[in-house]
Structure formats: structure tokens, C-alpha cells
Image 1 (spheres, rainbow, N blue to C red):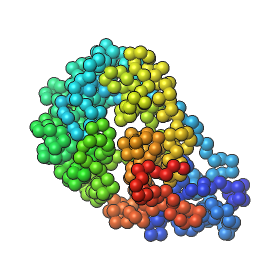
Image 2 (cartoon, rainbow, N blue to C red):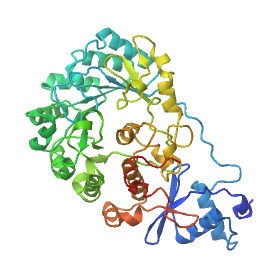
Image 3 (cartoon, rainbow, N blue to C red):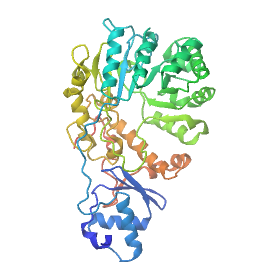
Image 4 (cartoon, one colour):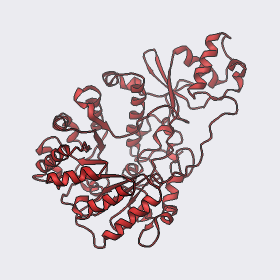
Length: 468
């Protein structure tokens, strides 16, 4: 049967959106995170379907247009509307803060790390935790802190994880990698090493990390490279560092680096009381640099990155794909979500398998942008299927409630997602820079109006998005 013969039975989602760039049309389906480029004529056919008006013409071109709409999941065949299953993800990744001790005092440390806590897991308990992680068939364990290299048995515990077949990663400030021997042991044990750097010059880096730390971190990077390690760089974007990305790129160009991850400053941990207030203008400065500067090739801005159409992300993964175990053995949904209300249990009192079933974790992984109580703010959003609600900790830092979205973060997430849609279709960074208002404005296919949530961040005096 021809698609044209099924016209009245084809299913078109009510909130299909499109974006324009001259005569180009990017159409997206928020339900299944599908998107593709249509011509103006093809968009008109889709509009007729959404509005329920009859087809214009019966030629081969119309049949081909309908096939394109179905194949790109903008329109569904009769009885074939996708049904979102309740998520029940297996555990894949465990963050283990092997110590809270840290040799630095960064003002925006999400963990508020200082000294090692009394009662941290012993060497034997740490090995036991690794055994449980492997028994649950998780794929990756990431050693963090504090500063994990403050723990003398870090390399022994990490080597045990590697012997059990786990992918073993580490997040470090790099200052304690002092000798070639240490770097070689790290190279032998860890699959990925992430080093935190706050600036491309001593002045910028030491503004937050402390006097003398820039040279120590640079030494650590050099020793890692010499041992064959190609690290990732974590860089927290603040109003200061957003103006100094050139210096950061110049510094990292002197090393073999996988990528430089740009993480936006948020009010977590000690950052609640620091002097930074990262906002839209700072984000825009970073985006402009990323879009237009050739030196930005290694930068990876934080946020949603659509890999390909129809890859649906129901939530951020916390409490499901990933969990966090602190230095005392207490388990939380995420390394950024560690309030008493989010505590799931302690491995000293329960096996990790039982803790994983605790409501503190199950509730987080069981909700998604399509159903459940936790992500209701996302229900009408035009990027919901691909964004998954964004980082809940970042939202909580802005809104005060892990279940509610922060309006400014949502503005950034939407801008990033749509920008990346266009990048996937060949639009260049300079084009995005020059025409972003046009390129990123969502219009409903059904009536050409601007999507009602597009500017909900403008509401004066409100930190929360309006609840549907």
C-alpha cells in the first residue's frame, strides 16, 4: 500500500519543531530525538499532515516526501507510534572517592575536599568494593577524591580492579605525579587519566589552585606523556577563564591531549560561597571561541551532543548507569548529589547489589523525561528526547530541588543541542556565530509559532521553570 493511501492514518506528533537558515529547514521530533533537513516544500507536506488537512497532489514526489518523513521518524506509520519503556539500566560505571584528602583547596570544589575523613574504607574494604563492582558486571571504575593520589594504596587497589577486567580511570590534579616511575605505573594501570587545569598560565591556574601548582601540574602532564599516557583535561569555565581560552589552548598544545572538557561553573560544594557567577554571557564567550577559533579543535564543551538521530536519552543516568561511593563507603546516585536525602546505604552494612535496589537509586533511574515525577519540567521541551533532562546536580544547584529544572541551565542546554543539530548537517561554527538567533529559534510545525518554552528563562524573579 502506498503511503499516500494511508495519509489520514499517518501519525504526526503535535510538537514537531523546525528551525530555519535561509531556505533550509531543520525539523526535529522531540519524542524520539530524531531530526533531519527538509526542503520548504517537504516541510509544507509535513505541516499538512500535522494539521490534518488533505494532501495536495498525488505524484511520485509526494510519495517520496512521505517516505522521507517516515524513515526519519518525523511521522509514524499507523499503529507504529514508539512506546517508551520504563528504564531499568544495568550498572556500568562507579565513581569511587578513595579519599577525601586533598593537597589543594579549590574554591569551587564540588566535594569540598580538605583532609582525609576519619573512618575511610581500609585497604581490604577498598579491594572488597572493587570485587563487588566487578561482580555486578559494571564496566568502569573511576578513582576520584579528594585527590586520589593522596591515598598510598591507590595504585594497588586500582591494579586489582584492572586484574578483574574493569576499565580503570582516574581524575587527578596532577601535582603528585613527581617521578617517571610513578607515571609509568599509572600508564600500566589506568585506561584513562583526567587532569584538572584551571588556566593556561600560572597566574590563571594558581588563582584557584594555589601558588606553585601550575608548574607541578605541568610536570605531571609531561611525565604522563613521556610514559605514553594521553590524558583528558578537565577545565572549569568561570567568568575569568571564559576570557582566557586562547591561553589554555596554547598551553595544552604543548602536550599530547585527548580533549579538553569545558565544564560550566555551578554552585555545588564550596562553589556556593565562591565569588564566581557563571552566566549566559560567559557561556556565549566560550561558544564564540569554540565556533570560530582554529585553536579550539581539542575543546569539548559540556552539554548534550546528539550523536545520531533516534538515540533517545531518558535521563542523566545517575542511580542507574552510574553511582558514587564516597571514601566512607556510602553510596549515592551521583558524585555531585550527596545530600543526606540521597543516601542509598553503606557497603559496610549491605552488599552493593542490595544498595543498588534502594529507592534512593531506583527512583532516580526509574524516572525519565517522558514519565514519572522527577522530570516533569522536561515534558514540553523540544529537546527532551536527546537531552535527558541535563545534569540533575547542576539543575539542583540553580533551583534548589533535584526534581526541578533551572531556567538558565535549560537555556544553555537547548542552545547547545540545536547548535549541534546544525553542525551535524554541515553548518559551520562561523555561520552559527553569525546567525544563531535564526538557527536556534524553534517554531512549531503545526502553526509556525515560536515554541512556548523557548523563552521561559526570561520570567523575572523566577529561578524555576514553570511546572507543567
